[in-house]
Length: 112
Image 1 (cartoon, rainbow, N blue to C red):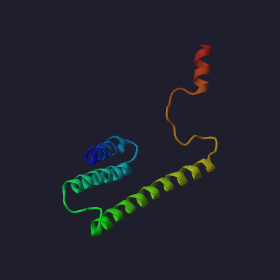
Image 2: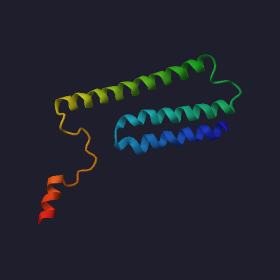
Image 3: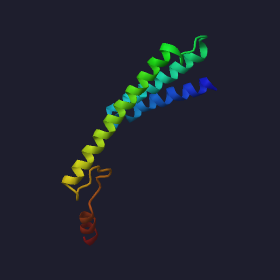
């Protein structure tokens, strides 16, 4: 079961690194992290030594904390930038998902 969970982590990491890179390049980091954790768990299940003890545990915890801090800083920076932009232009949407015709264009097309 541990290997199945590890393989799932590796797949999630690859999906994050490959698919979500279009949204932001920062998703490469958690993708690499999930692949790292998956490989770490597979190696831990195959070795006699416990990789979640001693210096190995410290290395794993430091990498995990660094990943969390980097992602927290990125998302807080993005949140603050969006909230600041919204305060400057409260009428304008920050994220435009669909750039289809506006309401005025649709009304104009219906009248014709």
